[in-house]
Each structure stands twice: as structure tokens, then as C-alpha cells.
Length: 313
Ligand code: RIB
Ligand code: CA
Image (cartoon, rainbow, N blue to C red; front, side, top):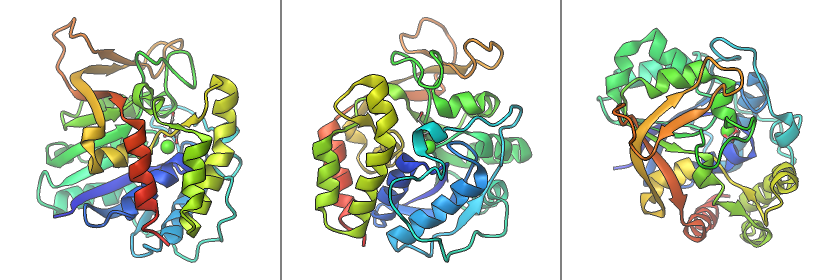
């Protein structure tokens, strides 16, 4: 039985790869819908990018919704410096023929969770947590019905990427993140601690291009663009590939390891806004509200990605 998921996303080249990995795996993953959120770039562009990625995959039956255009409390911070003006710079993907669904993405999340049997829908969050936070505020009854929240966000031992203390997705909407981490649904978080192990080296990007299909070529073009900023910043052999860790965790959890612990979100201090304070060594008695994934097998991760992307057009 395929696992039912909703993907909440701000595509973003790495979001696109995470979405493609899910859409390439229909036997294991049933994507009920994709919801765009403001983050890497503005909502309208992120939503268009999500439509483009769905069309690239050939899985045009998967519905795409637009969610919130800005964080719950704060001014939107975007990342064109990483992802380009379109948010999906790199490949030249055609204007999408597919249209957004009419309902608001937050209402789609709520209605799906209230309709589907409880504990059968997983929320996969690849961007700022605004839509999930808004859904939890608008309909608190969804919280106990969520099977699991698997999200890319946060950092602890690896520290921040948008500030010295915070990772981008959490930094953009710390109040939404605090709402999510307090909702009591099972959470598996893929922080920078693990995504920084998943480096898209030239050989790995070349393997995507060598697949020989349009998806592999587009992914290689995407990563060839988005890697520039990180290569210069970190000086590594490849740029970290963040969001596909979420999808890979669903498909092959054995690739990853971590531990349940308490994770709290800083929302008051401007210096540490959006920091995920992980009590990894259990020095407090605060509730263990998340599984903090710290390690991952990068060879297995890229082998899975390459094999699955080859299944798409
Ligand atoms: O910090 C990395 C995260 O921020 C990824 O989700 C990337 O797409 C950006 O949204
Ligand atoms: Ca993202």
C-alpha cells in the first residue's frame, strides 16, 4: 500500500528533486497533492515552479495548490541569491499548461486530513512551515490525525546557513515552526546536520545527466545552477542537496540515523531567531517531540536518486 503524502514546498531546485523522487516512486508514495509556500522566492513563482516540475515528471494528474504568500508574523525573506530570480534557474522548462487548483493550499491540507482515515497521511515539508502552522491554527483537530511530519529544516551541530544560528526554512517563519514542533504529531526532521553530508559532487551530477532522459538533464542543469552559492561559501566538492532527504527518508529510512529528542524554536531573540535548539544529549526533561536525523549514507542516497529519476521521462 503506497504511503499517502502531501508535499509542502517552495521550489527551489532541491525541492524540485525531492518532488521528482516522490513522483518517480508511485508504488511506495501516493502524492495526494503539492502545496506551494512563499520561501525561496515569492509564492506565485514557487507555485508556477511546482507546476513545471509536475509537468516535467509527466505525472500531470497530481494537483498543485497555492498556500500562504508570507510568514505568519514576519516580513518574507527570500533566497534568489541561491536559487536565481525564478527560483528554479538552470533548466529552460516550458511555461506550464497545467493550472493551479482553486482551493487555498491550507484548506486542501485541512480537508485532506479531515477526510482521510486518521494517521494515514504524512506531511512532507520542504520550505518554511507557514502553511502547516496556519492549518494547525485554523483547524487544531488535524494534529492528532497526522501520520507523521517529515521536514527539511533546522540545524544544531552544523549551525545555521541563513544566519550563524538558523537554517533558512525555520528562519523565514519561526512562529509557524514553533507551532508545528508543539503540535504533538510525530516529526522527523532533516536538518543541515544530515543534508550537509549529501554533497552533489560533479560525478554525482554527471550521473544524473548520464541517465539520458529529460528529467536527468533538467536536474543536472538545476544543480549546476544552485550549487554555485554553496560551493563558494563552503569550498566543498559539491553542494548539499537538502530537500530530497525528506523523500529518501520515506523510501529508504535505513539510509539515515538520528535520535528522538526535544527541539524548540527560538522566536524572541533577533540574534538567534529561528534557531532549532535540539536537546540531543537529553540534558533537560523537555518532551522528545522530534526525531533529529544527524547522519546519512550519501552513496546510498545518490544511488536511490539516480535509479528513481531514471524511471521518469
Ligand atoms: O536551508 C535549505 C532549505 O532552504 C531548502 O529547503 C531549500 O530549498 C531552501 O528552501
Ligand atoms: Ca525548499
